[in-house]
Amino acid sequence: MPPPPENKGANPQGKGLSPVANLLAELPAKYIPAKSVTQIADELFTSMFVLNSDFAFKPVVGNSYWLYQKQGKFRLSLVSPEQWSEKVYGFCIGCCRLHEDISWTIELTEQAASDEQFTRYLQIRREQFEKNLQNAVTLETALPGYMEKLPFYQRMLTTVLTYSLKTSMNKSGIAALTYDQANQEETNPEKTILEKTGPKEDHQG
Image (cartoon, rainbow, N blue to C red; front, side):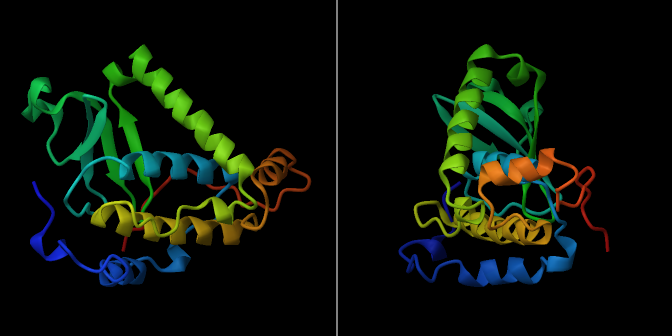
């Protein structure tokens, strides 16, 4: 499905500002919890893995989508693997869910989790991601921010994800720390300033 016609040829600096503002208005800071550096890293890696895939629709908070790989490219789809032939959409990586804080989770299929080629690819991407975090001046500077090169919906969600994770970092007091410093805080319970958080639960009501 092609992108909505109204988005074609628009000013990249202005396009999407209203949708971003709307998402931010729906994301009160009080609903964004403090998170540990491990949570921040996991959510950033997973979310950007999804947001770097191809899709041309607006994902809805709370809904599930399916990530496919075909000919080296990843595509996010509204359609479950039961409704398609693998020849059409390719290898199903897993079920993706957009949460209220605009982070994503992926539940890998058994096939993807046991596929040596895919798990090795994922490991390499994670190692590069970890290096980028370690090289960042602070955790805050490691956040993606506004990424003009991304398509419209991906760029919009990345911008709001950055705000969400930055808010979590500030609540945990780790935004100005380096990745290594934040990990040291987390592994030293006598000095840690992080709030312990449980499993991700979307706010209701």
